[in-house]
Image 1 (cartoon, rainbow, N blue to C red):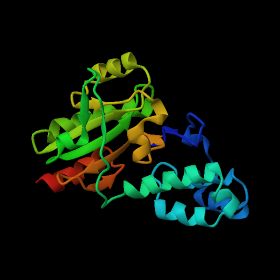
Image 2 (cartoon, one colour):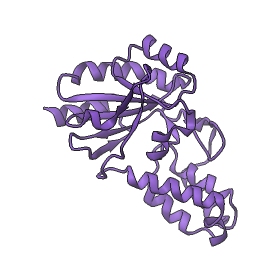
Image 3 (tube, rainbow, N blue to C red):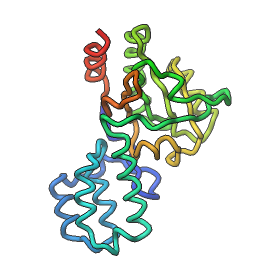
Length: 225
């Protein structure tokens, strides 16, 4: 799967990651060469790409001038980094409660005691839709082995969300606040690119982030054997 579907850069709604041609080393060089520019914050996020390392991004952020770090954009980026850290492997998964398509509240804690894959996606996201058949197969293999999926949608239109669930035969639990990129759960987990996922163990501890296809299946087979 081409994992870089849509990357949110501050208030820019979506950006195809494939369009970003600079290497990571070139981006880091740009950051270090422009410590006094607020625009450098966007470059730091691009360094992180699809699967950002909060420690690496925090180090780059600390190298910026105080005026940038203390700006409104800098404070926003600092908040993002804290959300990444709080949802990293080994941390307790932040609580999530949103509404199902039927309008009923459902929480991540309702699945406590199982391995849960929190899957961030949207009906309008092409790579999310291409990934769905893999998730269907994963769910079929492990659903009776103490595993479940919780879909968190970045949709804004209820009808589009429901139609995609039905068309792709996604029979696990789904929730959303229908706020697109401003989805509260996505913000809480530092999600700025989709599809993206978080694997949580039965005790509510994050054990992996952004595993897809056979890589995910192999880890589940090992954990659930």
